[in-house]
Length: 157
Image (cartoon, rainbow, N blue to C red; front, side):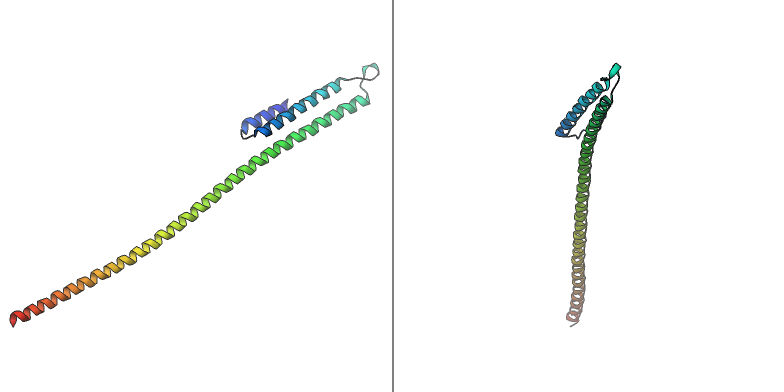
């Protein structure tokens, strides 16, 4: 009975129980309940003289207890296996998230490098443009100066 409550509590805390796993556990608990009832029946048997329990009765009772313990161990193994499956699933999910985060971080780093390269190219083009602007300004001033000199010579001449 208390094991049934334990399973119910475990089921409420872990809604990820698979239907097959839950059905298997229910079947095991029912088998355990049958074994417990048979143990109680063997406990009440008194086949000895004057209504006492014999050694055979006690051995039979102990055998039923051993079967109950074996069934309890099977139930606990099943619970552990389900817990391991859930732990593995949670671990795999965590590892998946880590892999996704790592991949996203690598993508961000690649984008940062691409942006830095693009900034470098823009600065180079800006420097080339500035150079062209300065050369154009200098040529304009030289032409203006030469035109002024030529104009002065033509007007004086």
